[in-house]
Length: 125
Image 1 (spheres, one colour):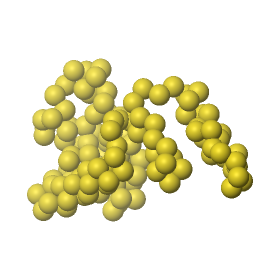
Image 2 (cartoon, one colour):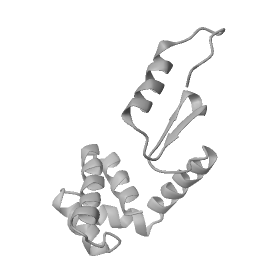
Image 3 (cartoon, one colour):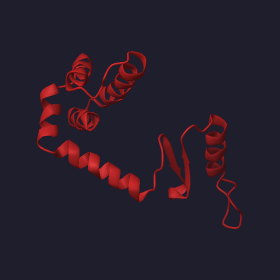
Image 4 (cartoon, rainbow, N blue to C red):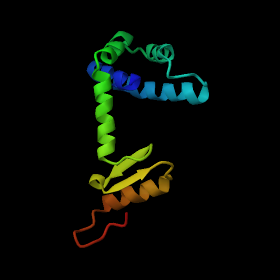
């Protein structure tokens, strides 16, 4: 929910790069630095270091906007039958790649989609 609140703030403040930086910083804090990123003080320290407006982030959590947007994301994932992370949904939802998928598999699927087969050709992905 914290990241959703950061995303909302970055959208409103036109600082979209801060969201991506926050995602990366939280991953590093958890996996590299072994910090408990579920703690509010850790989240705020990371966001503050990136120049985020902690007050605005906290407000979107308290007024329920961040939770509502997060719930909408979960509903969309359920609708698209997302089963793992990361997930790539291609070809209007007809293809789904998720989890530890190698670059060559991803590239082959993208190249096949770019090939634009005509209506009589089958897609190889």
